[in-house]
Length: 345
Image 1 (tube, helix red, strand yellow):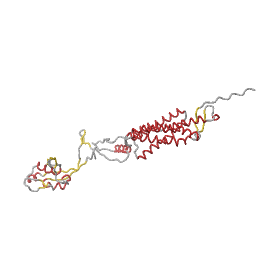
Image 2 (cartoon, helix red, strand yellow):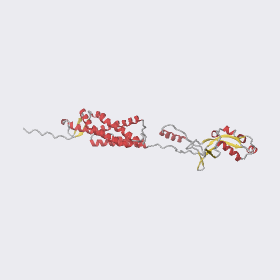
Image 3 (cartoon, one colour):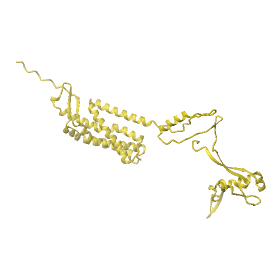
Image 4 (cartoon, one colour):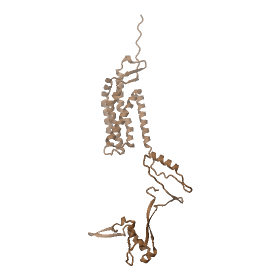
């Protein structure tokens, strides 16, 4: 059994005075109570002593009084008018008794709190507690209710991951509409795992725990780290359009394959811009990162965003180009006018 801040069970020391024995020793109940107080309580009183001309308040107590055992209490001497040695055990019965430390009442009824410890995940603890409460049956005259003195389950992490998923979908849809190409959207989507791997790597290297604040940084990475892939894909599409052969064009659509030269030219053309975007992003994180703990709110956001942005830059310059080589994309193009018919003979 327990309360909110401790156990309800307690062991008490009981003294049952023997009034005839007190009378024989010439002691009153007040004298006996004062003697017991000297043995079990604090200082007998606040004393003022002078040391080197400076008055100091001190509390005087006999040595070992704070660690008094029950047997030492029984053999403690009680001063009396006759000056004869009288022990506490000669004047009272000293024993111990187990009982309730506090008695709580509510609506004229006694309230008992039964507590237990569960060592495991919070969700499993809540399910176990609900099953336990359903299995409890109280006898007649008793009722059982749930105090629910537990920490509430934080559901904010689910909301963060929902925002992350929505952000990924919106980025892919925006890229698909701007480029009018599912292939381009797929290339940008393939760059996201590289960014997330960078976030995981930076937290592993710095030995920092991944928290909800870090999840906010991951959401920012979705919008920031894909910039490099968008720049590279746009340059690759430009090279594909400029390098297409006229005979490969069909009536309303064109299908082209990107060569290694096209991809390398696109990467070298946009490398400066990709690095510039990365540097400006990292520069914007300096106010958050300087002088902050990585486990703090701003420190976790800056760490996650920096790791994802750097990994996205490395991926855009070295890994994403490998995705583009040999890929085919369909783009709407202008249909060349058919050649004029030969003159009639």
